Image 1: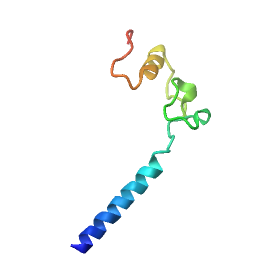
Image 2: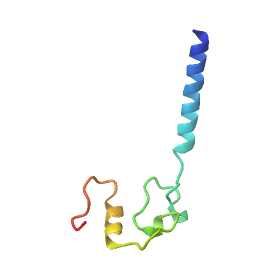
Image 3: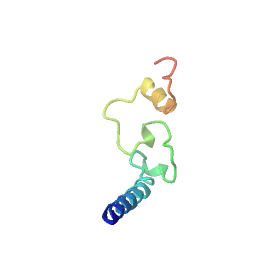
Length: 74
């Protein structure tokens, strides 16, 4: 029983450590977006360049995120 409790405690400690390390990650943010929790819309706010040309629809979809509805002209 003690071994099971010790294993559960280690698992919980590992989970909390992982959560603390991953919460400050800014993978999708460009260099000028430091200190923010939500990325600005547009390709200039992305860390890597888009793989294709950025269209008006892409811009409007990015601006509406995380809203559940797409832009009116989607």
